Amino acid sequence: MVAVFTNVFTTAFRIIQVVLEAFLALGWLILNGAKAAMAGGIAAFATSAAAQRRVFAILRAFVPNFTLNKVLMKAYDNTGTAVVSRRVDVLDVLNRNDDFEVVYGTRMRKLTEGENFFLGMQPGWDYTRDTSAMRLAARMDDVPNIVLPRATERAGDIVKASGGKIDIVPALTLEVPWDMTATYFGAGGEREAMQEWTTDLFWYLFEDLPADPELDAKAMKFAGALRSYLDTLIQDRKANPTDAEDILNRCLALQSADTPGMSDLGIRNNMLGILIGAIPTISKACCLALDELLNRPDALATAHKAALAGDDALLAMHIWEALRFNPHNPVIYRRATRDAVVGRSTLRQRTIKKGQIVFAGTASAQFDRYDIPTPNQFRTDRPFEDYIIWGYGMHNCFGAAINAAVIPAILKPLLAQKNLRRAAGAAGQIDGGGTPHPQHFHVEFDT
Image 1: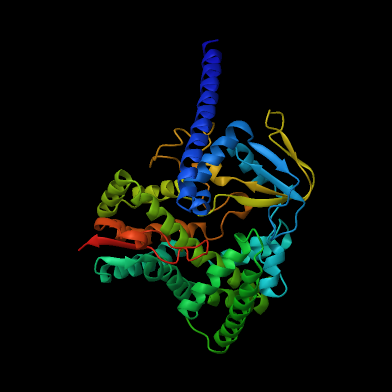
Image 2: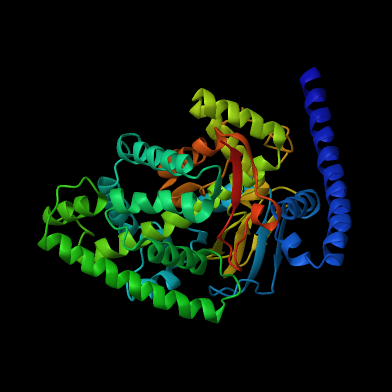
């Protein structure tokens, strides 16, 4: 009986907390939104992680699941919009592949001029064939044995040579993952071109909600260049074999063994897909995590101590917690393949109609007080399962293990520096240059 009363009290108290947080969030949005409007920065305010976090707090309290007939996503065909903000429902949507499909296939086929690649596939033979073959080429033990040592060396050398002043995007956060594509993927190409191609193609596939025609034209140009580069590379490598332990050589070895999906075209399309997913994701996550730590002196200080002590596990937890507050991707979207219910048998139950785009609020899920203890505190002792950084379920990021190793390796030599700080003025803020991805971010430290 005591346990029953305790549970009732705990549930009621949590509901009160959620509602109070929602009212506080509303007040924060009104006050800070007014300040931003008067300063002419309302667009930047509205898209900031802090503002989005408050919006999700309001949704979780009052309308955790809702649908609209209005089409907000223009890039992919749909009949309307749904938003899901409670953690249990977000994970439910991302697990129900038969009810909620990935939508990227149409644009992926435009990039390849033909076939889809596994990031945009539903469960089935093609998905199993391609992911299985690529996991044979990109082995789990490559991360500690090949990828991490190289990333650690490159990041350390870059920071050491910087002289205490560095624009981390071109010099570090794009450079190290590009180096990985060159030395481990075997498909780096010309550095600046590859960085630009992959960043804009990632934007086109995953972030172009309004279907910008100028971006479409640029993406088609870059996709053609990337296809041409990869086609030539594959033929050159077959004509001039090497002994390098890289993904391309392993794909060609699988081709020689008649592995399904490892035709020249299959190799090219899968290499194109993993290139697009690698460079911009790692760079943006590094910048956002560092940006958040620089906003939190206490967390920056403990991250600095962890970096100096070589406590890589604790350092990584600082980075994942920073990305919880400042995520590189606050939502994942899916499309309903049929009428489907979320939140069944609860007050938040809603039917999402066939064809509607579902915005699954992964950023919201990581702050859901019903499932995440003390969500508004910056903590480095959370179980990793609390985080939804690289997606969830079948379409969790293919390179999640690489990201988990390389991002801390990139940031560690910076965080180990004395008096790490932003550069003065606008240079010390992330500059996206009109894109969703950092282009410049200047920091300094004492030498």
